[in-house]
Amino acid sequence: MIYVGYLLFGMLALRFLVVLVNFLSRPFLPKATLEGEPKVSILIPARNEERALPQLLSDLRKLEYSNVEVWVCDDYSTDSTPQILEQAVQNDARVHFFTKNELPKGWKGKNHACHALAQRASGHYFLFVDADVRLEPQAVSRAVAFAQTRRLGLLSIFPKQRIQSEGEWKTVPLMNWILLSFLPLALVRMKWFPSLSAANGQFMLFDAQIYRTYDWHKQVRNNTVEDIAIARLMKKKRTSIAVLLGQNDVACRMYSGSDEAVHGFSRNVHQYFGGSRLWLVAFWLLVWARWPFFALSGQWILLAIAIVFSFTMKVLISSLSQQAQHFNLKFHFSQLGAFTQIVLKNLQAARRGRVDWKGRIYSE
Image (cartoon, rainbow, N blue to C red; front, side, top):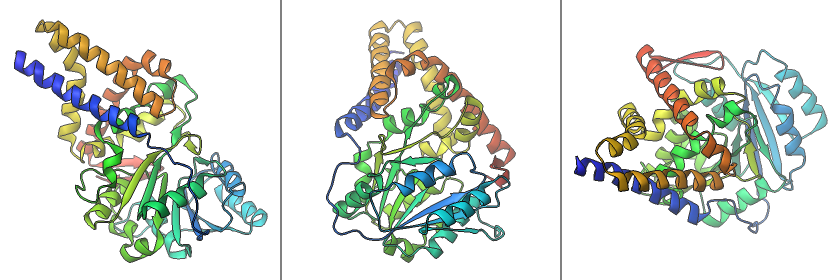
């Protein structure tokens, strides 16, 4: 029993080390000097985004970066998204939009929308952003400068999550809790080891020449988690990529409640575990079993250190994520309960062989 305890503790200690590395590396957009002002095509797939889209379009009008074009793909919206876009075109000459053609067989909706956007873009950089993302005036200039300095094929940013309800506190922090305890973000920049890959489709800045060469969204056209799939493909091609965390420069409110968050995260949570539901379930069981195992086996010192490690990780991840530490500590067990819901819902989707998202049903 004691060796099993050492194994369980060692796995937790490794995650603690990953969190510490991420905390010390401070993976945020630095201030940097631009080399000229290459044209940036800001590309927005939009399906029923009447709530969020006006705010993003307003942010784009305030950008410090002037050499941009904005393309929006209206993906068969049934709300007032088309009307919002018609008004935006009149107010800002940089904005263009189109309604996507019928979804071809073998494509996922967002992937096809992004592919169609790229076909119309003319910039030196392609910046794909989701409609619920908020951008500060300096966000694009800093992102382009960082990509130039590092000669990146892709820079992806996990936006700072704006959390406004108790239900969101119980669910939304789970994303960074998993990401930042499993993946040292600095290692994503290594061109080797495609398994050390991550990306967030909410903010993906591509070198347009490289994108046009490989047509990334077409290559992952039937993948429900296109961002991570693209990141892995790019590393296999030995293309430099980087992943950072947003502060106030790149932010969003991804979900508006716990039910919506559970449904959203359950679609792709297994992708955080290399696409393996077996590893997902193993991690879920370990999270719940570790403390009781230490207690029942009388390994009290390991239990005490494990508790300290677990809550210290929460504090460090909260700091990196720009989230209130006391809320994440307060809702620790509620978040584990929500994680259980997410895992079970993910397994149910796998058993049914389909995923329902934004009014479309996709096969697994």
